[in-house]
Length: 233
Ligand SMILES: [Zn+2]
Image (cartoon, rainbow, N blue to C red):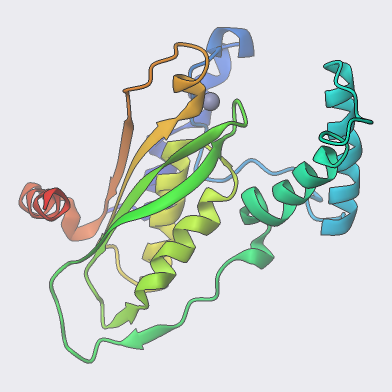
């Protein structure tokens, strides 16, 4: 079997998109690779410098839209947005914010799948900067080590706190779990709503998007059926 990295990268090869212009791509959410596209020197500015700069730029956007920034209700918005971007909703762009994960020995010798379902997440679509939210379900089979359950939530939050596309979110969570847990036997299912689909554009409120990653023993119809069964109950 090919290593995970090669598998994910060949599965979603960015070069395929090259004959489309941004205009042709339009509202369709295309996925160009597992890595969040970051520029070189992404962390040369400190968080405080980033907040100052974003605050000025966001004030300009509001001003261009014609809003009165001297209004009591609006004057704090640019700095609130800047703080929210850097400290909260996009904090997962900075690797220093990656959760520290400690593993424990699998003392109970539990060797069946462990499923952590309905992990709530909030992210933002990188094409429109409006929310994507939903549930993540994770399953793994221990290779001898186990992870604290709340750490699974923290891993999900970390990758969600970036501008995202759902496919990448799914694969980034999966790749991290494979690495941390030292096993290919990992499954990740993301069931999400995209506000760029429901609140604007096509305005479809009922559709949901499901993406999944099945590695190792989860690449098997019986295991997938077993997992799906747990997710139903
Ligand atoms: Zn979008």
